[in-house]
Length: 88
Image (cartoon, rainbow, N blue to C red; front, side, top):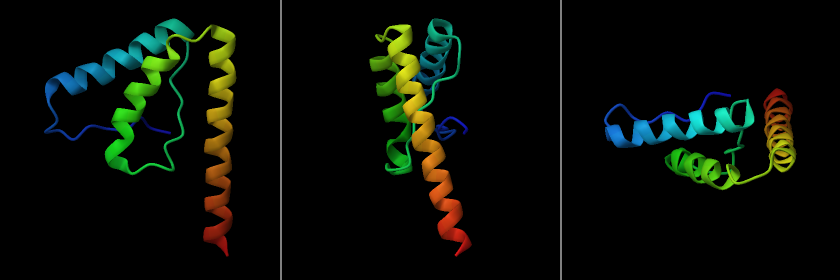
């Protein structure tokens, strides 16, 4: 799933912060940051991603692997529910 995008009018500092946070996460854990944002309005996505990365950078590798797995499950479940309910 694509990362939340900042509006092109967003301050340059916001773009840099999001890019730097993703880079720090990928450097520490060796994979992209995964978070399920389905329950949140789009206006909160960037803030939640930045907060999530900040919190999760403190995790040990095994703990973060478990959190990432849970987030992937939430995303998959949400997509399956969406497919099933749209198909009816």
